[in-house]
Image 1 (cartoon, helix red, strand yellow):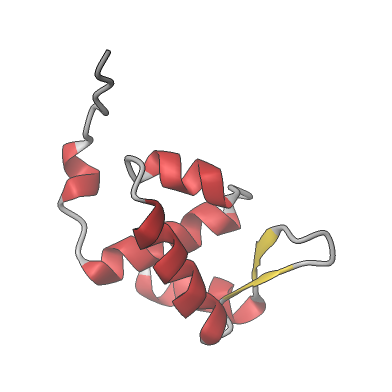
Image 2: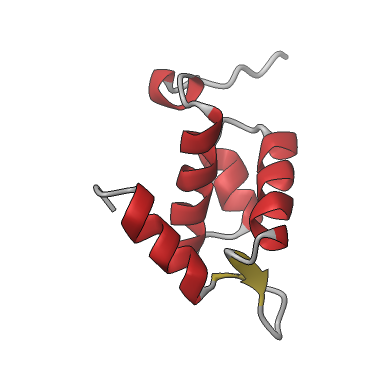
Amino acid sequence: MVHTIKRNSYINRLSELQSALYILRCVSEGKNEDQIVERLVGDRQLVKTWLAVLSDIHLVERNFVNELVITREGLNYLERYNPHW
């Protein structure tokens, strides 16, 4: 039995910056890594890579119970570069 993932054409057309902003927005909405992977049609490597970058530049972090959270800098970044947020 072969499972196919229905691809969202919007998600497939995201640029790199748009992907990062989308992941940042997902974190701001309280989504965990698995939920973000699901939203990005199963692209776990993309999500892991961007979460590492966003963490390195202090836009997201893990809290004391290891949940992803957006930092104040991350919120400022979203407000500046994602006007539809």
